[in-house]
Image 1 (cartoon, rainbow, N blue to C red):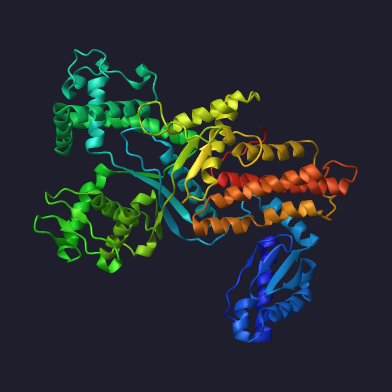
Image 2 (cartoon, rainbow, N blue to C red; image 1 turned 180 degrees about the vertical axis):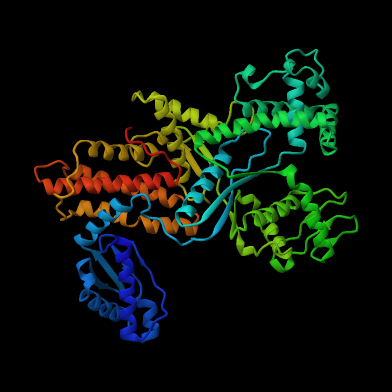
Length: 590
């Protein structure tokens, strides 16, 4: 018997009571955590929809259902009370809490998982940086949200593919290529040409020569190339010619293009490895951008699109309540939407996906809605198969709440690697004797907690000092709370046979948080809301720390000591599950 099976039996018993008393069989209701836990451990609003069908007041119905439940076999696990104006309050007994502890002990690695999405394939596109510079904190929030949602979906039974797409062609990449040729020569007398580079590659600096991470190196090339592009028309023409030559499949241009992208991808993957993040598939624009033109031609033949007098091709989206957009320019060249159509079709066909998700900022809401609508028109998939998961901005503040300058590199944003290094330095300055591996793990977990704790559609303000605080609402506080539990468990072995099961009120508060974990996972899945798991670990930390501060764990009462240690062990197991689901690394010692 498990806690989940007991709750399932409770729901079945309520349905049976409802059918027996009112001959109603098709009513939908839920048993959920209460708003106020001082009144109950669970609550259901079953009486309200039933009142309309039965012609009785909700409170009278709730009382009748309570009478039935309190006289049933489930009364040893739950006590039932009716509460105005018609709620059914459910209080768990020691027998239920004992079952919960044993449930977590037996199923800790899967407790909280469900089969809501069993058999479904979901594709989630996240963190799709342009490979002309290193990833910044905007990409970081995208990455952390995408990875956490993917983890949550998997814990709800789905098969999840994490993917990305990069716009790895065009003028931005050419600016980075020009910046490399012009500004990374070891000798200014060397011609800043592709042919000279091909003949004498050792005449150019490498990231190692500059003591720079590879993607940071390319970012520096891009910034200088972009400045030169704006300042000098000759440079602008030379850079544009690179794009033309690339489009014409010029081998020399492609060799330099591969060289520059190789640096970026190496640095990008090193950052992802630091974060513990992954992609299952990387789509590159150069591989599919021409396929979008074929879709546009098909849509034009079918009358889905219309051709304007200048030759440009326009959508017809009035029936979707959306503005029209160009899908092919007058000169026949493609746009972002053209490539997005091709890639969406490719994803759908490759993965036979039930749902496709895009973690992209809110500024792309209209553009994505247009893509989804056109995909429906083209027969790729229905719009309801597609979901845009938007998110807010990230600001970094100092101890006084002042927004910090985002970068010292001349760019407008703070790079992910630099942010991790700053938080590491702050942790190191606390002089707690952390080794390098612990510093890295704690810094990344502190950042993840600080960014994911806010609802994804709201802007995040990350205070670097608060992020490493050992007290309050911080990732370090959460890790410390878990470390305390592990330290407690290391003091004495557990004698499971000698366990007394009379829980104190403080213990029941911890147990209630553990019991609600499955509800939290399901809610986080439905709302694409990793912050609900952050709220969960914070509440669990607070309730356990309250228990730890109020009651001794090691006493002469062997039965109580073993009960408390088993509760601590269950809490550690669920802590660990929740932290891993949001990408944080649990530490046994902090």
